[in-house]
Image (tube, rainbow, N blue to C red):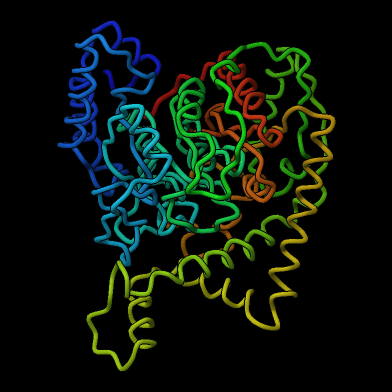
Length: 484
């Protein structure tokens, strides 16, 4: 049953020598052997290196050396983060056999903590999607109901944690890709402030929006992982040079006097009635704990979805231009007339439909004659959304909303309707456009499926977000697990 425990619980067991890191690693791989065929959370597993890492941790413990809170903890990594010597595909045919020569900064920092990497998790191709149905290899199932999606794009990471196939995982969040799958899978997922976690080695989707963050079983683990991965990186000019506090100091259950704003735009049309009820029930719990709850307005967030689907594809169009079949990745084996023909055939074979759709949309938005009308206008809307958040945060400590407008939907239900699929991120996208931190924590079940509560905070105020989430978690006590 070790696979069911959190990282901080397992750390105590390792320190007390109740269990070895190798035993723990083997236990989680046994769990993977039992459920992975149903869930399909992983694209690749690294059992031999994992056992070697675990053995090194055991040697340190045996020698009486200090170990970190994450040492020996079995971890899953989303497959858009470079891992030295381990295949990194972005769930795309174009990178099907790509093996990086270096590790991303976030992953490297976890390796420095002596985590045990279990493997790389499935995702929507190049992180473009909300259901993990856009993977070029296979669809991941939600452990709560195998006929439903786990969310996306970090669906493999969220499903792995929910199914106890990993103690925690790293995901990336461009428009909700950590928080939305965390919500649908009944786990904790956090998007830190933009730039707090370096993006070096994260294969880019939309550079001004992408952010790496943790997916965990509880808020305490989330704080521990942030301690490890946050901080300035000279390899990433957008990473923030700011002092990193000990995030575990935020884990107090005292939120008396905390001012919580509830944006009315996040509780209106399009939000399922059962989701709304559970969020309102959560607000009553906050009130009971001494928080002050008031409705607020973010008048420009109604345009967030439209702005996002101009900005993100435009940046994706630019970022994905490097996948041309020349330097690395897939190259067509068809006969070609010239270099342009080679580019065209390589990209046609290598990219899936959703990636092609966004590349075309982004290229159009950036083209001569349309840049001012589309991309530039979307950036102006983004500024208005940032101003809305800044204004509200002058008076309120955090904002609370649903994470996803619905519970997990059935596989195939929205796949043929991109616009319907894009609406899945309506509650999460504004935080990415504003660059602010947000966390999703479970707040109950609707029709037997998890509902996530989103807590958003001021820029670089992860401490208050974590404190609010931890206080709710302790009071609410969500204990349900998928019956796998």
